[in-house]
Length: 288
Ligand code: UDH
View 1 (cartoon, helix red, strand yellow):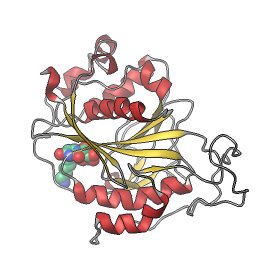
View 2: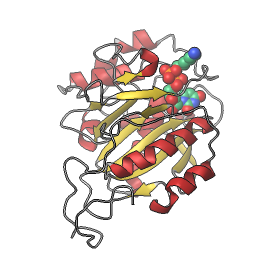
View 3: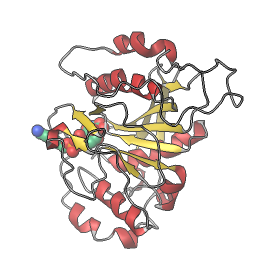
View 4: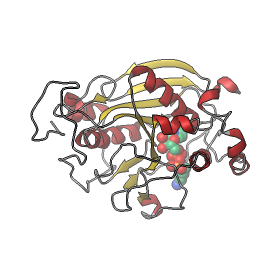
């Protein structure tokens, strides 16, 4: 078992001792390689024995500190998803999390809405389990250090601080895109993400502003622990830069109480359970 520790192998559930603050079997820096053929079946063979249907896992030797839903906004990036699952499942297991992976797939070929998919992921995951922490991750970002814990902190946490594409440097101080983690309370406090950023850009900066308007800060790992590899790709179709994004960022303060979780509408088309993930296909166009 990848997260196995020396502790007693107790009964499942509340009778187990809490897991250690620092998971005992982390490896530190990881080898990550995308230029290789990999199939979902390879990944199932690699990590499947430890998982439950829907990409669910919980440590067997201790009680996890947090119940984490990992939410991936998605459309037509199956190759990236395979790499992501191959690398992230073992990391999340070693981090001794009680977690589930939710791929929120935008149906159809309308303009992409990353933030709305993440709001939907929050709502749909909570229908299944009593998650207390939500990690929102792009499908093309893989951490190269497993000490970067996919957990929530006292303040909303930005995890992807040093991405190879940006020469491992934080591009600007308020950045919150890529991979981020908010507790249920933190997410509710900001009314979730805006639902009204269609196309590429702005939705992550809007969230960053929501966080500061609600008097919270952005917490981050250091720039060594927070290293990531991004899978190279071309711009997707139907996700061109949103020309309205700059103007919309001037309106966060006045809109955030009415544009977010409390105005979210969508239609679930299908929920499919794979061993490696829960795949939720949704129609996001409900309000346009
Ligand atoms: N996403 C999809 N499908 C899409 C669009 C976006 O799954 O069609 C998801 C995916 O999780 C992705 C995330 O939304 O990681 C963010 O979208 P993005 O990868 O397009 O954003 P990023 O800023 O790239 O990473 C912008 C385009 C880069 C073009 C580079 C050309 N060299």
